[in-house]
Each structure stands twice: as C-alpha cells, then as structure tokens.
Length: 167
Image (cartoon, rainbow, N blue to C red; front, side, top):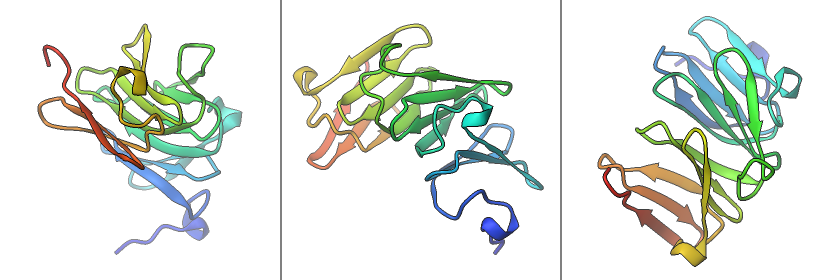
C-alpha cells in the first residue's frame, strides 16, 4: 500500500472523486481544495487562482482526449484542456450551478447531474432534461454510462436511464 495524505502531497484529506487519464495520470477532486493531478511521482493542484470555477468540487471525469471536466458544488462546471481552465454556468446554458455528477460519454459529449436536472454539452450547445422530459427526479447525484451508451442517472428516488438514438 502507498498512502497519500495531506502530510505527503495531498491538498487535503477529503477526496470525493478520482479518474485516470489516458496518459496514466490520476486526477482527483477534493471537497474544498480544488483538483489534483498525480503523474506517478509528484502532485499538482489546481484552484480558483488557476482558473477553476471553485475549490469546492463534487465530481470529475476525464475524456478520451485527456480533457478534464469538474463539477463544483456552487459554481457550475470547469473544463481543463491541459493548458487552461474554462468554466460554464447557467449563463452559458447549464441548468444549475450546483453540480453533483459529471460523465464524459464515449462520443465526447458531457453530461452533468445537478440539483435541477441534467445538462448535456455536445461541445457547442447545451440541452437540459428535467422531470418534465421523463427524468425520475431532478436532483441527480450520479451518472453511469453502460457499454451500449445508455446513460443512467441516480437520484434519491431511484434511477432514470436514457438510451440515445443512434448510439
């Protein structure tokens, strides 16, 4: 076992999510100190000072091209392209700035679970889904993608699954 704590590299002990990038780097979301990246030898942490929307992170995911997507607890989502952070909020089309879950689909689009429903970003446009569209509950806490591309959205009331046309 190799143990990582605040004493040997972590920005804080409370890690809420992790994902491995295609290049083998480990990305992690901390509860209140931003996002960390471990290359196997050293840690680098990103905070609001680096352009992250907020240091309060709920979830993250890494796309096949290495782009890192981060869901914050109050400031929308942020995307890291390897050089800089760009943030998206309700002003950009996200349904809510309180984001609990984030998953990058195999087609490269991004799905965000929020307290007011699900937002989908295809790289250009935002589309949102709520109970009015068939979602079981608007408070989406987790997102999973099945091998056939079906998306499942977990809430306190159960799970809603969406099979995308042509996927």
